[in-house]
Length: 159
Image (cartoon, rainbow, N blue to C red; front, side, top):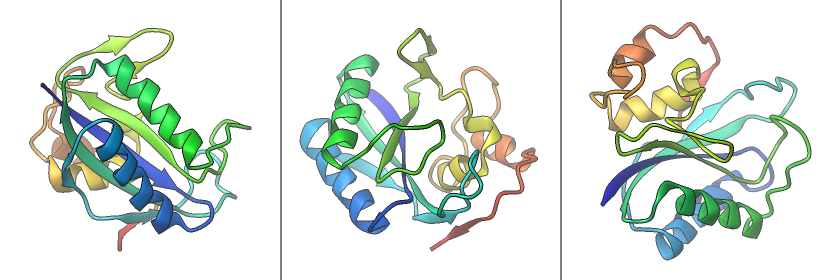
């Protein structure tokens, strides 16, 4: 079994509904959710004129390989109306694999740990809430250390 950290994000429509439905579908199609961070409201990152996001980190434990989890979360995003039109575009739901155990994966389909997580406050705030002592297997620092060194001044507030 592998411990998997997922980041959920939504900035279109009923954001709370999409986050809740994503968790229900993850539990039905991948694995039970073992832990959840608080929900955070965050300014849009990368495309600053977009609506604010809700973000949350969840933890699951599964025997599925990382690429199978990716395939399933892409399916969940489609079910919940995710449309990919532009980079960093608004979306009903976004589900990212942050960590897959201590594995390091870097191929055309998937990069784990998520390549931008160490630069993004909207990821590190909820992640540090539930796993401050988790060590990033590439950077070799804890999540709390990475968060404390962060230069990103994006507004991220716990709801």
